[in-house]
Image (cartoon, rainbow, N blue to C red; front, side, top):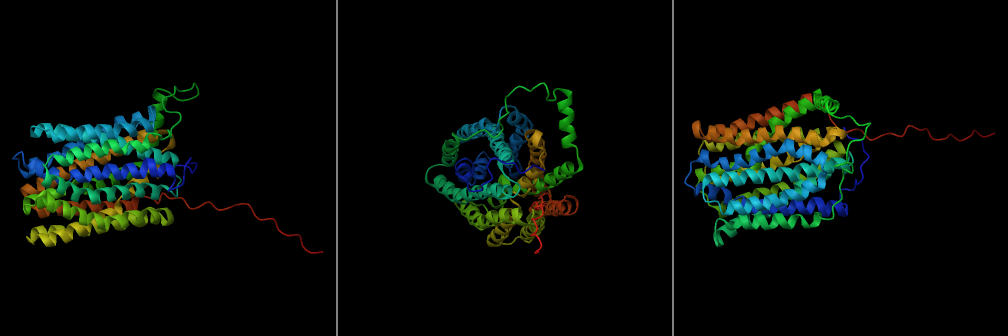
Length: 423
């Protein structure tokens, strides 16, 4: 657990507003604009449901491949350079996506986009762990994710409008432009790891000693059980975060980008106040007060969604189920990142985040793969039921095996001077 020796603990500081919340909102707005266009664009290559789901898997594979290298890079060269480079690569991948001439090309560009997105996220998490106090990180991370949710709330409706007004490729161009705009407020950002890029001093461990110290820090029971819980959480939410769940209404109800964008926006509106409130609860009462109930509710709502698919209920019922799933998902939004920043060993934060995100990305890659496989072989309802089961497993592991990482406020130990007795 990190010590509360942060250099910037104010949740709403000017630096956090310009370099954390505003870029997160801008990047999310661009991603949200592309969200309703992507399933329809994939379908336009005349591929099946299972093959179309690969556009989401490819992005997740990019994030998986980037996790370990990025973790080492942010320890070696600093957080700032990685944070600034990520959105530039996101913009490049989105422009290339817009002009993809074949489905394999589309997959390659989505892979690059996933890599770039991972760079920005890991850099930001490492910087929050560097600068945020124990009782500020919950609000900082959920604030970042709340701005992400806000951007994704507005984005789908705009993306559906752009696709209908101009062309299915227009939302991807808008995504690229907004990705470049997002780095402007961060240009004056200070490096939070001042020793990054410097040569090791003779007193610092090198070579095998460094590797042994890293392994010793990562191979502890609290860290390993957290990694396992993260894997289950990622299997649950990978389909939801990647947008692969949107393939279901496209194929089952033949929805276009306009209707899909409207539904996604409606669901996102429900999540905004939830995300912002969970951070305050985590900082005040503890991390597990939101994460365990959140995953239990996510399991229940996914079970309800499975029922709507099994019974072949109309679109309106699915929309209600989708909004409920989104609300439950937002209760868990940022929880795992906050717990990870709590337990990350200070001297190997980059490497910890790299390994952690590798495990997370493996789960997120497997999620839409399993979702699509089950949907095509045994029915959509079994795919939703599988996600509900992993959500319940996450709640059980976190509730029974993971200790509350938030430390109690320090109590003054010095006794007040006593008044001299009257003579």
